Length: 110
Length: 140
Image (tube, rainbow over all chains, first blue to last red; front, side, top):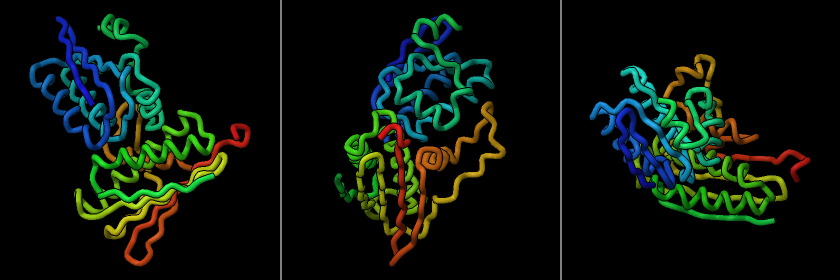
């Protein structure tokens, strides 16, 4: 798994690639919580390069979504790979996350 | 069609070897990439449960997997020597709402949503979890 972040004035784009599972979700959580601690509550999660998304990764996403919403922010997903969108749908979480077909559309939503 | 076997130590970073084998067996059974991936997800969750809830931590024992691959049918058996742990009961989702899902229980939910059969057996000090997935007849 690799995580890169790109900060804009109003939001931060987090690009996650590879396998987000129980072996890597701790790093995923640390990266997102690091942003929250810096006051970055508007987050775009670019999931185009996700190859595997387990419940461990989904739990991090749900937990971060709840935290940023409480702070008046939002976490949305951009161009999720089928592996990401299928995992979200199987877990019944597709109504929870705002999803955009491109990174640009997700950025424009803020 | 084929039988696949693998034994790995109960470590979170070894689960991918099992899910990789599941994907290979599923494709050999004629599953498309999405159905194969769904099976990989479910088996990955079952392995995570064995390590976290069965063994309680990593490196306490092995996970032995055997997979039978037939046209349109995949049977996966996971065997471990942890204390009894039965994931065969579907989680109670009556209190779940899409707006506020609990962060726990997602793994079990995924297993039960993906697989057609989830059977648990305790035999000679081992947990045996059998997961079966059928393709719809028109897809075979």
